[in-house]
Image 1 (cartoon, one colour):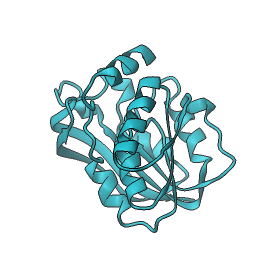
Image 2 (cartoon, one colour):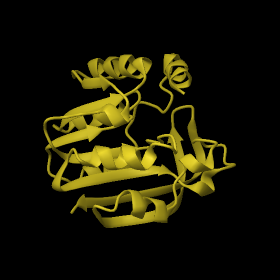
Image 3 (cartoon, one colour):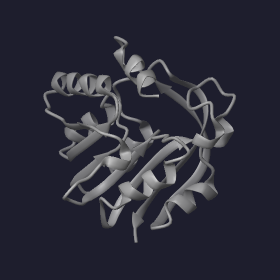
Image 4 (cartoon, one colour):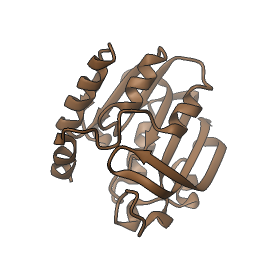
Length: 197
């Protein structure tokens, strides 16, 4: 899996574009600026947007190629980015964050619930969460996402895995993606916002 992502992020173009995810952007713009954690951040498009708005950003991914591309994108926009190469279950931080944003962070099914709940420990009480990922109805669509249904989400799985969250938005939606080379066309997503209990 790591080799797959290193190869994808080694491509010259940005796999998912260099503009932020639309739902992430809309929801972040509603919040008071503070600190944000971006797990599985890939090539840095959301991190760079957050930096441009004054957020203190910590991003991570397990792909070395992702970090290189993220650093390049940050420098092009006049920023330095704090970016770690680490697996989700091994991530540790001495500080708590105001926001965690999961943007297409499809962890392997065997560790997904544990990884999501581990990362939520880094969110402050009453801290905000922004989430968008492919739903199980994405299977068979050509607009991106895992081909394993166990890595895709359903509403009840979100409620179970994020049981410390008071949901503000929680929906399955059909959207049109236009993100780089690999997120293009009609897509079925689960997205939510909420605060940590």
